[in-house]
Length: 224
Image 1 (tube, one colour):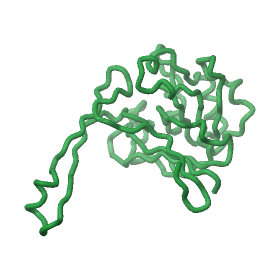
Image 2 (cartoon, helix red, strand yellow):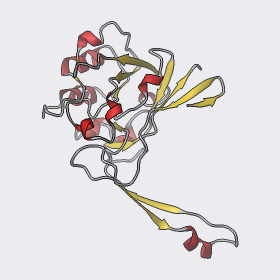
Image 3 (tube, rainbow, N blue to C red):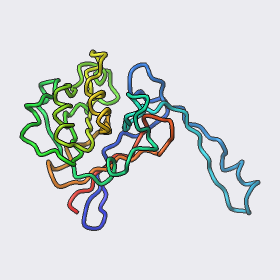
């Protein structure tokens, strides 16, 4: 946690390291050097050197945001996602029963979600980096996703493997949210550090045209 002026910044992202496994079956990132400090010395004044790195990875690496283009060919891609959907959003932490998998309308209906980043706190991030992370994860049901859309949620995030049940090939939560232009943040971590209300959430990917999903440095500002 980092102090900034009147508030505190809370990092909600997993670190990206070479070879890490985010989602079973997808390749881990390859991190290497394009130009080393030694190689750079011939290009600059004496005592001046730089490092230029190279990374090769799929968009679904670490903590990331899905744009509508992830699900829909004509949906907004990363470059077209409005910042109003990604940055400094009033956050709502919804802590769900850790003994259940499916997050249903009944788990949400007491909350005011309009204009908020709805962050589903399941505690599943405790399994990150282990085999358990990939099996039996919590998810948002299709009707619950529709309820969030109808009530004007700006973004929906979860600290789990996927916002959908990965045993359901129809992916109703992704379909419903992204069709409505609601970005999805997956593989969040540290949501227990947030209050239920009173923080502001940001998760801004690089604006890559023609690209659907990108890692983010997700964070919250507390106590502003």
